[in-house]
Image (cartoon, rainbow, N blue to C red; front, side, top):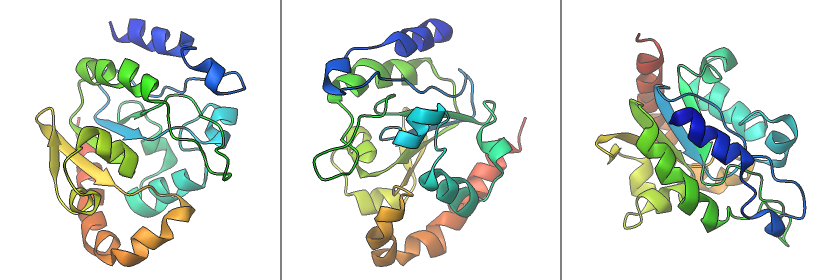
Length: 192
């Protein structure tokens, strides 16, 4: 069932007319990866290289926030790396990345979550958090443990270099919350 769904997603061209270029669904992980990480959408660099978080945001996430090796991060036993949209959505009129099309996460994300057999979730970015926790404040979600489908769900701000304002305004995230998150990730990836 997992392989069948992954193949369906890889063949998806549902919103191709919105892009102006050939969409490339990016999928990484397996059915029983320990951690399911869901962000907003792949970047242009990820689109070009076909490797999730292969950009500046990924460097911050992997090396600074998680403090794990790339081998640990890209090990499919450890991480299933998904997004609200599996394809890079292109640039908006202001030069930033467009928001992921709702049709993508409406069509795929819940199906993925029903099949995956993970231990915890990591939800990255305010838009992703709003989809899963629509009635809660983003800052509150970031600073506490949350639960999704009965499992721990850690919410992170986006690790983009453009997100400095949030990090500066909420220093307790880097000073207090990140060490807890880091310890949890290391505990999970180091268990059999």
